Length: 179
Image (cartoon, rainbow, N blue to C red; front, side, top):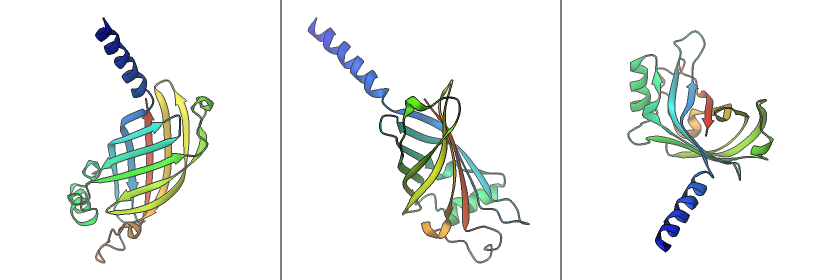
């Protein structure tokens, strides 16, 4: 009888602990490094993992670099082999905190929050500060954000041959629904 009670209590505790964090494994990250008058340099990764601790506002995400898909296969190949070096640097990680986050204040109308944290990419780490629109929907907590990073800050070299066709300024858009 004691074993049954102990097992039941462990299951209840495990369920309680697992509900502390909200997760998405299908977040979307889009980046664009296009230059006017040249071919679009844009990729999307629809399998980015996001984790939110609603009690503290801590947020983290993980994107596998080989998960970014381009319209042109050759661009994807160059991205993975020459720019981001996906075999050596297979992922991008963001760890941060949503300032003044209160899950109880969320509703269907988006609220703007400031997110501060560190982005680790290509073996380098950089402080990031951005805003995010966050709202509650029927399926979870939605987070939308966009910000810009500089390729050179992450030691990503753009060859002189294509320097005028690829921007050093990379626009990043984030969309995730956490449950």
